[in-house]
Length: 464
Image 1: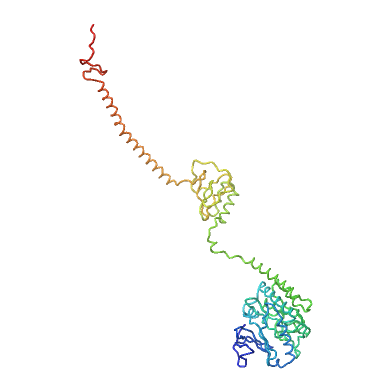
Image 2: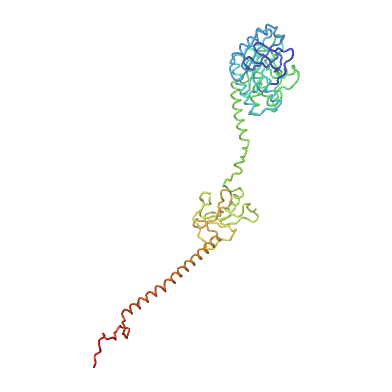
């Protein structure tokens, strides 16, 4: 709500409230922003001097203020204080921060179906509390609805009267805003809660089209259209158009009640909010988009499908674009590192003595010609042998064989050297032992190796 500086003719203090700014002015008086001694802000309305001199107006105003005190609910501005006996009667309500529905539509354009239905449901619930207190607002319009952070609030009960009161002032003119008045208000008939339902329907139509359902023109033209012409609802959402049209029925008996209107608007708001959430695609998360999923890409799935349909071992067509990730290696009997075991494979194929040519695609029986699974990051998995073990690098294998041969040769050479050194020594010892033994057996004078002595101790030979 726009605020303006106080004018020279404006009062500075009213009752116990100090006035700070102008909030607006209307046919009934001027609304100020004030505060009490505790700092509580209020919207204080002072009645025009010409109306203050009318005793009939004073009495009606007193009855309405008394009825407004009984209104309970969070969708209205709570009445704080009032002075009906002052020179210029006034009343103060709780200040509601936030723009009016009129200003919001004027600045941002028409409202969507979900938001409009939600606001309409809250306003209908507020009207239920107002009507239960025996009060009819009589001037419900976009400028009398404030959109606070806690929800919409209905304000300005300055011209509201008790149920059953006449809609005409002492001068015979209709009280209210042309284009939002009900036909019975224009005719001067009794007002009922259905009167506020008509005004609410016109308010919802304005919020969804940014225009009055009865167009523009002078007050007389607008009042004539309200009574005799049908409202123009072009631009009203399809979900709300039938309900808004029912609210704008000429006959008050054909309009829905405020309670029924609140329930139906809540259903529409819930349905429209769900439909809006379903039609809005979820935004991809940056972290999830860059995170590897471990699944084959669409290109990989397409190639796998083509190879599966073509039979085992069927190579992809030459016209197909090569995969940007390079050739897919053959699938072995063991799962790829970091992945789960294969479920679709059958018995492992026999081992082949020759290695497949580099770049060739080999498949195993029972696998349907599908290539080997890719790793968690979409890269080709390592090749596997028939036993489930990954084969060694050929270069590393050659190095290991060379080291094994060299070590074996050195060990064999060392053994040979050791045996060659120990063999002559062992043979020399045996020979010395034999010689020593023979020397012990052969004495001096022996003439033969058999140990026969030829000395004096020998037995002389027998003669003849």
